[in-house]
Each structure stands twice: as structure tokens, then as C-alpha cells.
Amino acid sequence: MKQKLKMLLERDIQSWMILITLLVLILASWYYMVFAMTMNMEPAAQWNEIDIAMLFIMWAVMMAGMMLPTVVPVVLLVDRVNHQRKQRRSPYTHTLYFILGYLLVWAFYSFLITLLQWWLHLLAMLSPMMVSANTVFSSLLLIIAGLYQWSPLKLRCLQVCRSPLSIITTQWREGITGAILMGIKHGQFCLGCCWFLMALLFVAGVMNLKWILILTLLVMAEKILPRAEVLSKIIGVVLIGLGLFIAY
Image (cartoon, rainbow, N blue to C red; front, side, top):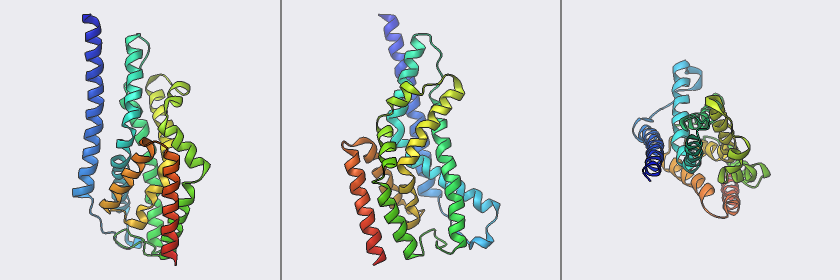
């Protein structure tokens, strides 16, 4: 009885530590977005390495703040498996390495979208406040994002994000490197599910907190609510409608 109680307490403490770590990362990210994310970009010809680095940091922190809340159920599932392996005295790796792999995927996305934003500034398609300054660009981005919501790739990625057990049962890898690679694998599906939605910040405003929150809630709804495929397609129709409205 004492042994079972001890194991239960160990599991609860470990799960709480993981939750607290995630909560600290999420709160720190949102604190940055609310109180420290103020950038007024000069014309792109005047950018230097520090400007680009700061822009990358801004995107990376935004992606962490927006995506970490959606991955909490998966992280807890991985942590539960790790705890069971620990009880059986099987090899296990701390769940934080899985989180690291997941964040690496979004850091890579942040790097790519930083370069994209620099290019858009070079073309004068974004204002100094990082909002689309081109109606055609805005409408095309909304329409393409809406069409992507109906694509088989989007629906496949959404299915895996909502039911990650297949990755855990078929892609489980041992060791620190294996845990990081598992996090990257899951992060790839989440990236495939949400990357176009994140790019819509170019239309609404990269630093627009209201739209950052709305997009975060939409991503969470797709991953948590029942009949997410239907919700995804409804979002797609709305985006296409907004794109056509802006165009005409």
C-alpha cells in the first residue's frame, strides 16, 4: 500500500512539475507579447542583423505562446507513458526533451517567416507596423489559407494532432535524441495543421494582440472540440469569404 501511494505521489509531482513548466513558458511568452513586443520596423533597406534577430525572437516567442497551450494534453500523455516505463524499470527520458523538440519545429518556422517578412518589407507589402499594405496580398493570403483548410494535408495533420497516440505507439524512440525527435515529429504535424493560420497575422497585424488571441483560440478549438474537420472547413469558408470581400 505504501509503495503504491509513493508511486502515485511521484507521478503526481512529476505531472505537476511538467504543468508548472508549461505554464511558466506560456505566461512568460504572453507577458512578452503584452508588455514587451513593441517594434516599429524601419524600411527594409535599413535593417541590420540585430533587427532581424529581434524579429526572429518576436516570432519565436509568439509561436511558443500560441502553440504551447494546445500541446498540453499530448505532453501529459507522453509524461504518463514515461512514468509507466519508469515504474517497469524500462529506459525513459524526461518529458521536457519532447517539449524541446516541439519548440524546435516552431523555432524553425519562426526563422522562415522572419525571412518572409523581411522580403515582404523589401517589396513594401507590409507597413512599418507589420500590417499588410497591399489589398491583393491580403485577399490572396486569406483565400489560399481558406482553401488550405479543406486540403487533405490539413485534415491529415489535424487528425494526428488530435489523436497523437499513433505517434507514441509507432514512433517511440529511446534516449534524449529520441525524445527530441518525437517532439519534432509531433511538431511537424502541428505545423502542417496551423502554419497558414499563423501567416494570417500579416493581414491582421503581426503585433495585434486581439488577433493573436483569436488565432490561438481557433487552433485550440480545432484540436479539442468534437467534429474538428467540420470546424476547420467552416473556418476555411469564412476565410475565403473575407478574402473575396477584401478583393471586391
